[in-house]
Amino acid sequence: MWSPGVTPDARIDITAEVCPMTFVRTKIALERLPIGGVLEVRLKGDEPLRNVPESARDLGHTVLALEPRDDGTWCLLLRREGPQC
Amino acid sequence: MLTEPQIQRYARQLLLRDVGERGQEALGAVLVEVALPDDVAAAAAAYLRAGGTEVHGPSIAGSPWAPTPPLLESSPPRRLDVVAAPAVPERSGVIVGSDAGRVVLWSLGETGCRACLLDRARGLAPPDVRTGVQVGSLVALLVQRRALGLASPIEGLEVSPGGETSTLAARPCPHRPPVVPEAVLRALLDHLTSALPDEGCAVLVGREDHVRLVPMENAQAAHHARDPAAFPRTARTAFSLEPRAWLGLLREADRTGERVLAVAHSHPDGGTHFSGEDRRWAAPDGQPLLPGVAHLVVAFSGGRPRTARWALWSDGDFLEIDCPLPSGS
Amino acid sequence: MLGATVIIGMGGLGCPAAVALARAGASRLTLVDGDVVETSNLHRQPLYGPEDVGRAKVEVARERLARAFPGLELETWTRRIGREDVEPLLARHALAIDGTDSVAAKFLLSDSVARTGTPLVSGGVVQWGGQAMRIDPGGACLRCLYGTAPREDEVPTCARAGVLGSLAGVLGALQASLALAPPSPAGRSTLHVVDGRSLRFRTLTVRQVSGCPGCGARA
Image (cartoon, rainbow over all chains, first blue to last red; front, top):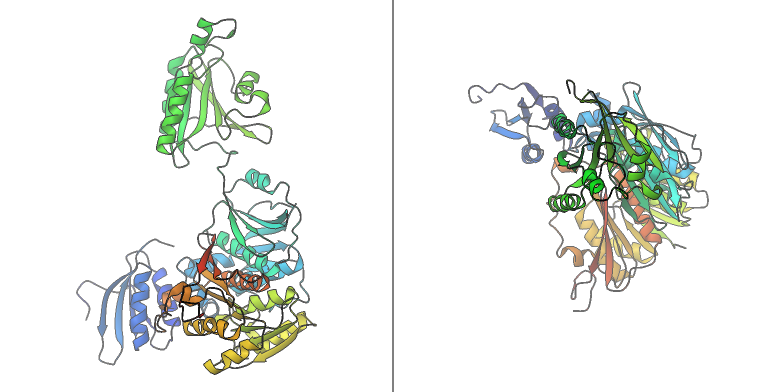
């Protein structure tokens, strides 16, 4: 499903969370990766869809892809950028 | 790694860019010992514990705050002291005192200069606080900044009786020699060597992050030749900076936003002790001629630099600190 | 001495403001908040502990304040106030403190100052920063400062929903100090801005804007 060559280093599923825990989980998962690491986030709902990619960008991380899935959820691919905390 | 209960408790703090998981762990890695008046201590402890930092201090009976211990997985390895003037923290910590009705807070970190803190804290009376919640939460803020690694080596705040807060200005530290890169130090030694058998002299100019050498000519020889009665010593045993060269250097430094960091000279056949003559030159009438400027003396023997020492003005006298020389000099 | 004061919102700002006022000798406080304590509140609302999760905030606050300040008269409202409650509530108090977390509520309170004659200490905290401003009848209001109210859906994203607890303490305590201070000079208000990240504290003078719909300044 992803562009060839992009394998996530870690995956999280935040479909059961509400804001702001959606982004808390995402932020922690990103911070645990080395710089350049890729995180796959499974999410659903309007609010996380708007907020999570934008919040990640706010912190300087890169949105690699955001794709809908057949079951109504979405898959967000994020690359962790520096500085290393 | 944080546990699930910690993530739930500290979620809204974890969202801060400057905190995150590592920051939250850093908040939990410090144990704060608080010795302040009750209502200030209570507020400081309440906010620190709420934020995930363990606090020890006098038992605060009658306080309105919830006695919520922080969620920690292990004992904090580091300690930080919060004290009331005239006490001063032994290492990293915060001092709270009063000065003419204002409450003054100073925070010192591991890399901060304790002599600078003592200078600032001198004359602070024990804290007389009317705004306990204000001062207590400011203490918590300073401690959290320190624990998170966001604070300057020394930072200070002042609170008026009406609760208005302002930052206290930092000043360059006069108690530590400037950090001189090896290349600059070697260039200095070469210059001093070239002046032998006379005393050589030079000036170090720059900012905290960047230092450059300005080699100078020892004007003592010219002074002695012109007026041996007024200048009985020769360039063998004394040095003098040529006034025009000195002024030119100051003007140039002003232009580039730098300042004079140090004056260096050599003792061709002597020790590195900042001699009586050296002291009289540097502080005639008991006051430093060049406040904020460090002095460096390099001792030569057999034509080669052997040892060096800094002399820094502190508290009415010169403090002497060894200056290691690069190997092979 | 300060007359009866109402604190609208007993969250990050309301908690320290209430304690600071009580310590300063306030005799009557009214606490208003419709929310219950949640786990994510605890890091910045230190009147509440983990054992209080699920209980009404004003009930917990009342217990803790009553125990620490026996002479203090406390009234509590365990519901979120509506538009129709605001003016009567302000009218029967000597001063109000804004501890709310919504833009709409802040502007509603600010607009009520001129209509009720009750001064308000407005305030807000987000991430590492915060602001507080005392709005007196005849002084500059939030609309003089901001122009029109921002739309309600301009809510910060999750990333910006972080807040440092100690900073909320600083702002709430500042609100209490402003409540105890003399009223602002006519036609003006002072905006206090705190930045806990750069450790800077600034004040700015806000002048009444003529024709302002919020405070009714003469056009």
